[in-house]
Image 1 (cartoon, rainbow, N blue to C red):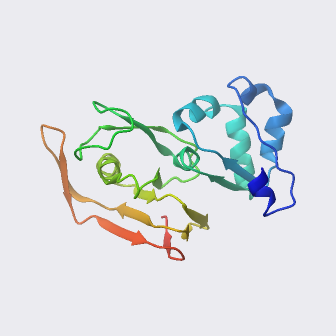
Image 2 (image 1 turned 30 degrees about the vertical axis):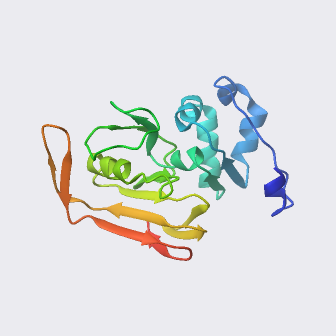
Length: 206
């Protein structure tokens, strides 16, 4: 609240919903529905979605978004923006560890908030070298645009145009061709598009 108050004079209220409150706390839900800016903090994106998914709070957030509100988030709060959400869990790997190879069906995904329909967000991307994870998810979802956002960096998206702001970079990978899956579940593909974008650069998320 202190940080946000430096940039606006609007009332700033923090909510910590339980699963029951996401359906029953009407005054909180109304505050979300009519908010001008909704900021989702970091933590555990799966825990967030377990509480919000299918609730009246979920509907309120989408009503706010449809009404022109800015929806924003950091870390886990960025991951939940996608319709297909990277959970952070990995099949057969220690949770949170870097993948040692690029494989199909090794990164666990789940339903996110769906504010971004055509792209999948990963975060802390460059500093944590999450390339294998991103490429593995790309092999599972070749029609999606995979976007890795580094720390101290953000995407500002308006009318499907994404603009990079902050101190570092954003990696965008899409359109893999001729995907081949081996018996080991390792994959290969050709001619994928990749872009490394710095502050001020833009791209179309469609």
